[in-house]
Image 1 (cartoon, rainbow over the protein chains, first blue to last red):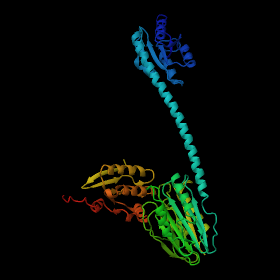
Image 2 (image 1 turned 45 degrees about the vertical axis):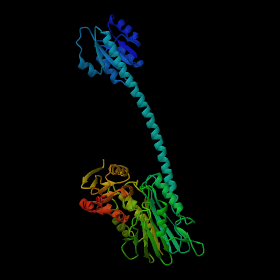
Image 3 (image 1 turned 180 degrees about the vertical axis):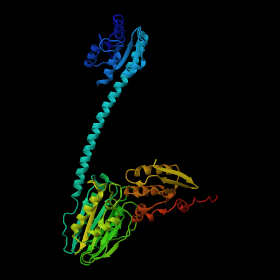
Image 4 (image 1 turned 180 degrees about the horizontal axis):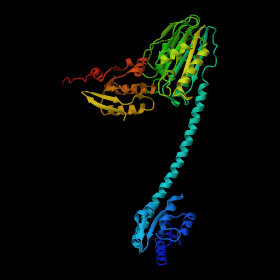
Length: 398
Length: 119
């Protein structure tokens, strides 16, 4: 250890110096408290042995100054009481001394006290090393976490590009949608397309949970639902070998077969087909909130009888709801990010409020309706960040 | 621990303390019930009376428990209310597992242990 002896009578100091050196320590001396204070700030000492009575600055005061100063490492202090002095343990300890000796110095006793000091200093340095390494690890973790967050945010932005960009697919139908992504990757998805000159296919789905697995499943589903051969959305006609649309319930049943996996990774969906000329709409609702039907001259109602989520239990039967729509009728499909959206005091928006709000906004265009939903939900939420994706798909017969 | 189990006759009644079952505690919930099942408690009544809200992860966890018990035993759910009941209805889970208003009703609905038939 690097030891500093402060003070000490001319008789004691040389002996103390010699003993400490013989035990393998590097020893420096200071003549008084002021000198000791100067030295202690210049060089890193492990151990300071200071006399109680020192000119300029007394031992306990020096000790207090050491404790009040910020050193690179801990400094172990032993106070040494003079020959005629009663050792004032309380004053010494309150000043921050670690140990005490008194003159005449009992050297075997001093030796074990110094060994104890060495042990404490060893522990101190191990602790400091651990703290250092923890600090480094923490820094690495923070960096990795920041990078991951950035990646997830970039992925969420990319995911938004899967959303439809065309609104005028057919003169007999109007379409609009709303998508408020949660801050991190989530699993909502919606899309629609004209499969032929009279059939509009639309779907909206919500993968359970959040994060990479959920997002990847949602992206996979968008790919697999594109009406290409091999997709559950189409089948090959036995008559002319051409691709024809599969009925919604069959599409969902096939998805359920293909996507059996982990229990907590499944999705809910509303998948439908609208015949834009006959205005017949059929949809399959699988674990998804019931769509809201807004008849032109009636209050909005929730339609559908529910259904099993997809990918949870194999071999389930799915049903279809069939609606005969009229000109001006609208169907609003939405994810549970809407009905479960919580305000500042954790009250959920609920379907009831949703249908009432839709009713209040019924007079304008579809676009105005979507803006109304966005505004109402934003007000309800009261903050920019949403806990879950909020998505709405709206269609209207023209 | 977010659950507590007690034995009533041949049934193990597992009570969930939480009022929300979501993604944050779904795994813990599953692990705790897994322990009871591993310990041989396979005729289970899940008491969800405290539960006021469950999200999609929570539903996945309950289904997972249902599959875990599978043919080894039997599961009935008790005390579901409000939003939880609505979610069961919406997702047709009320057709998958049996759900009762009270714990005694759920216990009564569990299939009895097959009686010893003799050699």
